[in-house]
Amino acid sequence: MAIKIRPLHDRVIVIRIAEDEKTKAGIIIPDTAKEKPQEGKVVAAAPGKHEDGKLIPIGVKAGDKILFGKYSGTEIKLDGEEHLIMREEDILGVIE
Image 1 (cartoon, rainbow, N blue to C red):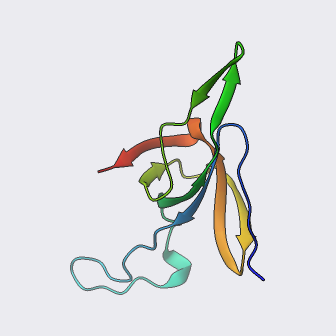
Image 2 (tube, rainbow, N blue to C red; image 1 turned 90 degrees about the horizontal axis):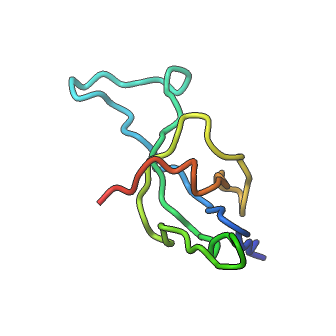
């Protein structure tokens, strides 16, 4: 059974995009030396947050590639895959 989750308020669910295993020079990077990628793909986005009785929509949507801070978000596991759930303010930018 697939787990379905819907983020609330101004949160998004992101899956990290894996980085290359090799450098440009062809050196293979071992798993222990890798840093977690700061690039991801939005899987789901909440409608937005309410402020002064008005709904302020989120600026990203499912499918967007984003950059986020190194220590942003909370790690969660959905269907055996690691995802992050984070606030919209933790997103640094959208990759176009």
